[in-house]
Length: 576
Image (cartoon, rainbow, N blue to C red; front, side):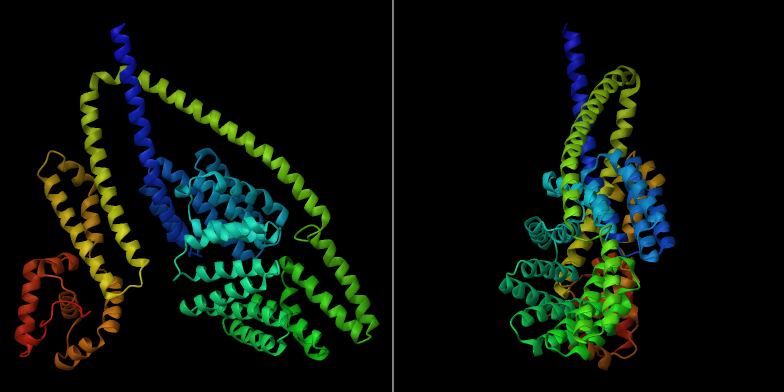
């Protein structure tokens, strides 16, 4: 009886260990997945994307590989949708493949991200009914999932907000936009887009004071982040406020500036949008000729895209008003026929008809049932998986007793090594992210380089320690610590960024150098700038990947070359 009890207790402890270890890996995997998503979000070339993900797959575990495959399919689907500029079979197939993979992984963060991306793909091309189930699924998970597990929080909340705002769920849209703001750096251009979204919601609900407030904030954010298109759109939105306040001259001026900037930035869609607004103001002011000319300009672009039919409806409705004012019965008849065709098309896409609303309500109720069923299925799947883990653990325990000591020892060594490498990689990533989310002053760089030197010291100690231990073969085989050490060295790109910032903040000192120390090489400047920042010879050597003697000799050569060398390092830190 005692033996049975001990055996059962050991088995339970083994299960707890395996489960906790698995949870730890999942947390680290989520950090890596978000890193992969953010690193590839701007890639618009399928070959570059493929190469990036092949490299990632070659260094990933089996769980990560499946997640990474799904991310790859989603980004590739987006590239095809941009190329075709419409909903297309290739993108549909890729999204479906990604969906199948993610369903099996039971990763709520990736599920939210996938369905948001899938839904926005349909939403972008005005296929609201197809977008609806994806956003409903993403929304349910968003409202029930721990925020720490949500990937790309800012973008996910923003895209869901756009959809729900357009289908009339204003409160949900507003809440999501405010959450998106919480997770968006105000130096990010997306900050202005989110502010604009809030302004638009308030405007559509006739809360003009709040709308103007957010449109003004959008304009300020766009100027601060040098986002010309968002600045132009902010002017166009403020024109709505001035139009509401009967200040038509100011509204016209703002819209003309909006169009001028948008044309310069080659944003044809926004030019169309602003021309529609401007044409309506002209018509309201009874300037029929100007209204007709302006609306026709908008029609030229809108008629080239099927997914802009709702704008075509607005354009042709305005042209119909103009035809009536001009007593052009032939044009009036043509436009009425055209409007009928457009309305028929919109009934299948983004027309806000009663039938669509009823259909969406039915889908929503059906989806609620389906969601609950899926949740129950997921819970049963988890219970079954846990039961299988317990059974397998109990069976495996008896078999592994024979050689557990050796395997456990090797496993611990490898695990310690991998955890150490990952911990050091995460520290490096945190430092880099911290720098990226700051205003990037020399003080920020100083703190960043100080952390980097500490990490290099730690790495050197770890390398020496492992080389002098009986685990040296692990590093000899994998070489991860040496690779990480090499990645800490100052690259040409890092140097150029640092140099540019140093010259900007220390212009007087840089002028002093170029005036009094002609023909300084980049190698000289690296040592001088880092010394000026307060780094000692050892720290400089670490960052540049050279020996301490090499740094000293470089300074000796400078001393021989320049008689006024003593004035070079009079101050060892950046001026406050």
